[in-house]
Amino acid sequence: MLATTLISLALASCALAAPSVESKKRASCDISKATIAYPQGQSLPAPTHTPSYIAIALGTQNYTCSSAGTYTNVGALAELFDIACLYNTPVFANIQDSVYDLWKFMPPAISAQSVITSLHGSSSPAILGQHYYVTNPVTGTGASPKWDFTSQGATKGNVDAYVVAAKSAGITAPTGKQDVDWVQLKAVTGKLAAEIYRVDTRGGQPPATCTPGESTVVKYVAKYWLLGSSL
Ligand SMILES: *[C@@H]1O[C@H](CO)[C@@H](O)[C@H](O)[C@H]1NC(C)=O
Image (tube, rainbow, N blue to C red):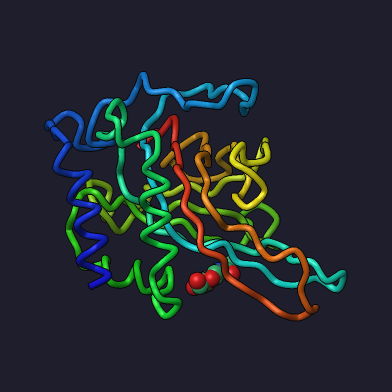
């Protein structure tokens, strides 16, 4: 049931695609001139590369409770779907709302991992890959966000199709405190992208207080823009 719903979503975005041979390596439609839309007066630093991928992601933000009784972000896990071909369509601007509605009302037993696992065998080109955290490759301690397209779609089997990044800027979500911040990140290792933007976020924020030692995962949806791929 879950897989069916998500695959329908994936195929719906795919159906709008007009794949061509030369675009096979990258996003399924030309997005080299696409730009991130911001509400009036709010923005992140402008990118210095052209867009390579635009994805809608669904997953969870992970938190553990600090001794101060507040949640600290310790990671995330999400599945990314290609929406490059939806850019310039009426669906693009608010797709995060439709996907968040779908994701939010799925039973708690359906985790981000079970979504990823259930779609793993699918050969749909609309599935780009996964977002999760790994040990910081530079310092060897702490966690760094990674985007990994090595197991899906056009980049399947390409060992360089990943990027581990570090945050370079952030703003409070223009939609409010219930949504995770919009952030810009820069690549640390990997060839998938030089810059990453997380925008149009929905959900993902933890409860305001907690009991030290507790942990929780909070569902979220976001658009990820990956720019400057050197694959
Ligand atoms: C985040 O939570 C998911 C469960 O949704 C888990 O599979 C994943 O390993 C967690 N990652 C981190 C870094 O905590």
